[in-house]
Length: 306
Length: 214
Image (cartoon, rainbow over all chains, first blue to last red; front, side, top):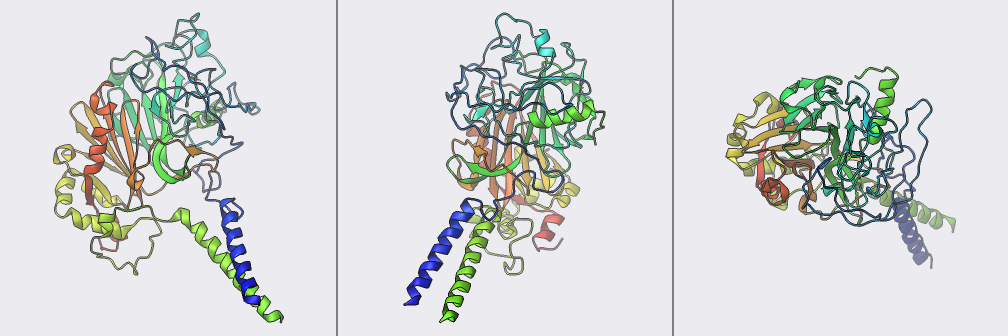
């Protein structure tokens, strides 16, 4: 009599256990912020829930970072923004994921992927969009100059998921900009130093790219684009310390026009879940904005890079 | 009367524990390995080195090393021997002597990066033991995930492919000098390099970790 009851209880408990695991009752796989020092930290994570309307690919004579015939991003609608005020003592900046209107759908998670990032400019700098800002190919028509004061003033603005044709799996459309545009302190090229975001090795120098691989786990890969390549302070194989001069901000782009800025990428190996529920590990692009904000706060507070 | 009930509850508790434990270990399982490599004769007693603490499938890697035969040492000859010995990972190379001639290896022990030159382009090859977990709410918008979790991503200057073999996350990246270079504008070239990435090289640290001795 009791045997079927016991079996039934066992089955129910097993089902409950499975449901519980999937719901995170027993703890989920480690999340950023829970790991050892050096692992990313998160706060106030919010994930876009809906598609957003994307404009045509940005093309034009200024701020182009891809060729006109490349694939178009999927149409989508702006997700609900979750603006958060900059922390007390911080500088003026829009929250992560809050892109210029009609420039794409931002990644709203607040993870600081590179907690000890050394701000990649030696001086002040301005993170914003070089395509959708003044003087950009998709910028406001009444502000045709890239040297417009709006590009060289606060607040900063995220453009990681800005509408481009490049693979960006963390963006709603799966495509985006892969990095953050940062303008130097002034609208003058070949003057302002770009520096190493972390101690590591220069593992590649291209015609308009410099790649720095971090020495410490998880060995993040930082890519710097558009420096004056014939005046670099480093070469492939060099070991550098955090904050070391790499080169000067410019507009080198293999003959393609672009504005004076530095495109900054953070890449790393990640483990996550695809939108169709499959566990996957891949090496991909991580949103640099929150790490840059935190690094700039440290810089403004006079903290040295290490 | 009560004794069977208590036993039943204990059994249920044990079942619950087993199910929970097995579910929780799922994310840390070593990643997929190539079926062909798994079929290779085992040279390391799997019982002697049960799942490696570093998550690397050393048995599969040693199978790959043996399948590489004499190709590996030949292809890896140009790499800095000290950097090869320092790398505690199976180093994966494309079977392409022209590409690997003059290639430079930068080793961090648990991560390596190789840079090789092509005419008008460069190729980067990396291997990593560690991955960072994404926040639970972040989903990856990927058009397609192939065998061995192969994902190809278009970059500003080329194509970036990553895949998992022997529990190691490998990348093959093509970077072109000219943005208009056809090799970088479609996936074909980088996929070809991935398909050729069959040669395993292991230096002292990797051999030791694999139980082969230094």
